[in-house]
Amino acid sequence: VERHYITDKLGVTREDIISTLPEEMIAMFSGCCWVVWKGLHRPALCLSPFELTGSSGIVEEWRKAYSSHRKDSMLSQLPHLLYWYEEGWSKTKDFKAFSLVRKDKIVPY
Image (tube, rainbow, N blue to C red; front, side, top):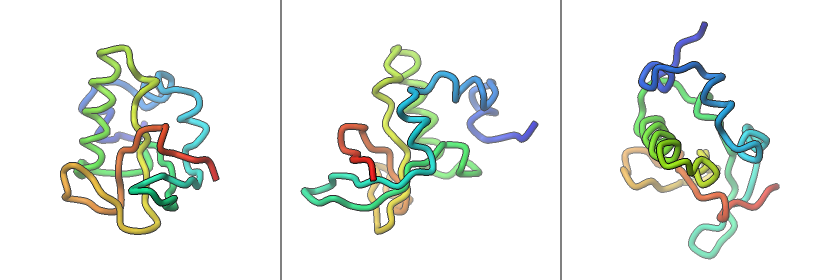
């Protein structure tokens, strides 16, 4: 079984986590989309959290969001993990290529 930072921190399997995610989020994994950001449609790629390795800022931010949304039974509101095809933004500002974005800001490609 391949180990991952998120599964190690949460003490569950990848399958356990994926099975709790909204189907529409899973369907978008590895797919291109547009994101309405600052009034413009910007190109991005929707990612599974398991497509990134290590404990980088965005992986930890996603893990915290997942834990918080799961605890509050709000996984349908969990933000999507995105890779920007141009410079992105994040609250922690220690990474610029990735962000967590609400689903209402995403337009399928």
